[in-house]
Length: 371
Image (cartoon, rainbow, N blue to C red; front, side):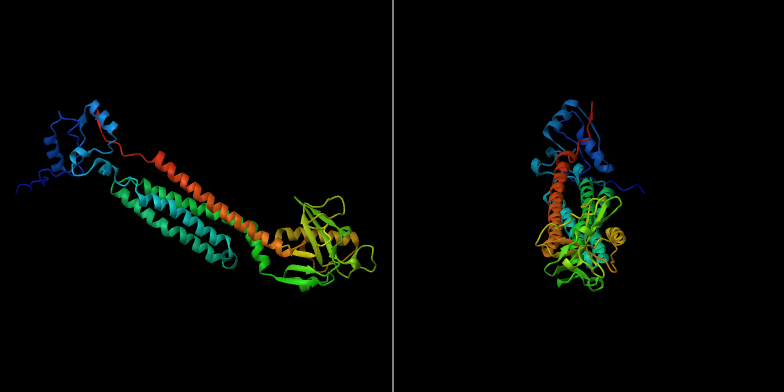
């Protein structure tokens, strides 16, 4: 049996594969060429005069299927087959303008605030899910578009912006959390004590986050000592007049210490940390960094040896006038950083989107072979 006759288009019907500009190349036998293209169902590449190609480029056509072959549509509203998937639409703009900043904001919330402190594992898992929900469909859409031979540049842009939003949010949120928010939540989770006698054993204040001392409490700067590593770790006992060097007998154990970093001279016994010179300062904000605490303990051991005093259970505080205010500064600084980095990411994401539109996105070029 002879092979079935090829399906030809009805008179006046055009297909996406029949790409020819009759109006600009009248000398070409277009009727025969169109019939051949329709029968073979294959793209048609034709040689047209250089002048015709120049006119085509000047008119801004972005396909080999110009308006002349599609009289039912105005040229200004056409999306041609050669530019499939690469046209600029409101949906694509909104998707790339809103979703990446939203991912950044949600991830930064999870990794900056209380969830990270109370449930760190859940915070990390939820952060990855926040990024995966829009990212996986974007990857799938890019693969489908590429498989169909369409331009997948918008899908690739979406993938890049979401991935960048997640990675940047992860890094800056971790830095912000450990620099400020961890200190705030750690102190907030501990107890607050009032009217504390400096002679109190440190064992009774192991869970103290903020301490307000009794009237007459001061820092014995004459008992100041330091331990020098990369930085200078400074310590001085918190005491009353009964525990000053001029008094005898002294306290049985100096367990409460004011501390600071690089605020004393390593060669001399002095202490210039915190609000040491304030007559109204009688509060302590707990020092909570484990790495620094090791060096403060070494400084206390040196003070014990130098001044012949005892510190059985040393507990370290930053000497301040208002412990509540100093605690709030940690949260305020972390929150301000969170607002600033979200605003900066939104701005940078918008700039990247505009750069893609202005430089990376251009109409599909007509496949014209010039003479």
